[in-house]
Amino acid sequence: MKKTAVITGITGQDGSYLAELLLEQGYRVVGVTRRTSTQVNERINHLEGRIELVSADLLDQSSLTTVLRDAQPSEVYNLAAQSFVPASWSQPVLTGEFTALGVTRVLEAIRAVDPAIRFYQASSSEMFGKVAEVPQRETTPFYPRSPYGVAKVYGHWITVNYRESFGMFAVSGILFNHESERRGLEFVTRKISDGVARIKLGLAKELRLGNLDAQRDWGFAGDYVRAMWLMLQQAQPQDYVVATGRTHAVRDFVRLAFETVDLPWEPYVAVDPKFVRPAEVDLLIGDPSKARSKLGWQPETSFEQLVERMVRADLERLSRVVSV
Ligand code: NAP
Ligand code: GDD
Image 1 (tube, rainbow, N blue to C red):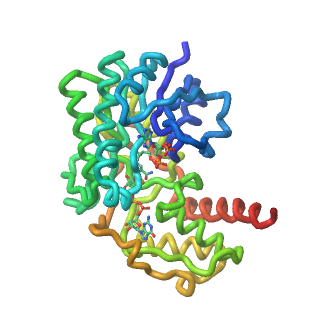
Image 2 (image 1 turned 120 degrees about the horizontal axis):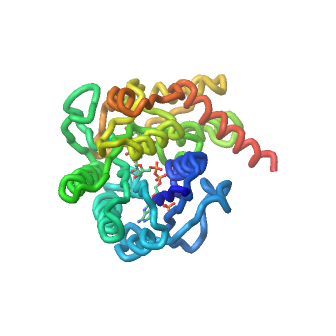
């Protein structure tokens, strides 16, 4: 019989890649969307007819319980969150409701409907914040630096707690930054790839950014959703760091992105204090050895390939707009 998986956050970057992977694995995929006055499902439009969409919200307990009761999944992937770090300073309470308490609501829905359902929580390297050790691994203490990071620490520990309190198969993937051509335009990598493509096509003259010195361990989202799935196929529920083990400064991403279109970066990039954060996470670099040895997972896309694929995708997309 086909396995059923429920994905919250299916309209997001990771939701779309995970849905593709689970369909390939033969799953029935049920995606949770929240009600909006206009439908913006651009990341999953190509999956129409192959996935089922149901309406629920992380703020609404009964809607989550109803979704699970109706869908009867064996696996739930909680990818939904307010995921943009700067927005967590302007909307800290909302971020706490979605990104922290929302996790408890999903866990409570599982407990009410069928505690045997396996649960994946989208934890984050933002939890390491002001890092206590380099590289960061599963045992590194958390020191979050934003309301988003604080909310993710809550989501992480409530997942551990439900595993220990109720014996649930509930796990967290501590994923480092992962990107793609489906990344939201406000995140730095996509802002850069989109900005570079606009400059190359004569649609923009400059790219305004914040802290160019911040270092991130960037991977490709398509590789990372495989690790999520693998975590739920194990005999024992455990948490895993998912990362490439390499780190680069924002400046490196910028330089490579401009190199892809044969332009120097310096004349086009301006630092704008508006994009500098009240508290920064300076250096993230993960140690993925546990995921490699226990899950057999490793990233397939290099940093250089990631930058190139994102810039080329934006060039292609914007060229179509220009030629219309
Ligand atoms: P994303 O593109 O921002 O997608 C977030 C998803 O959450 C969207 O589908 C959004 O729906 C949904 N959502 C937000 N609030 C909701 C609510 N109240 N009820 C129901 N759905 C709601 O994020 P992503 O990059 O795919 O990341 C997926 C998850 O992994 C997030 O939890 C993120 O915090 C975490 N994470 C991401 C990274 C990364 O580098 N990408 C790294 C570590 C952890 P709408 O489309 O309606 O807005
Ligand atoms: N967004 C943005 N915009 N970031 C900028 C800019 C800019 O103009 N200029 C410099 N940066 C720097 C930020 O200060 C940060 O240090 C770094 O670029 C990455 O920022 P984002 O791409 O916004 O990602 P993030 O690291 O804050 O958060 C992402 O990764 C987390 C995992 O570590 C998000 O996907 C989170 O949801 C995720 O948990």
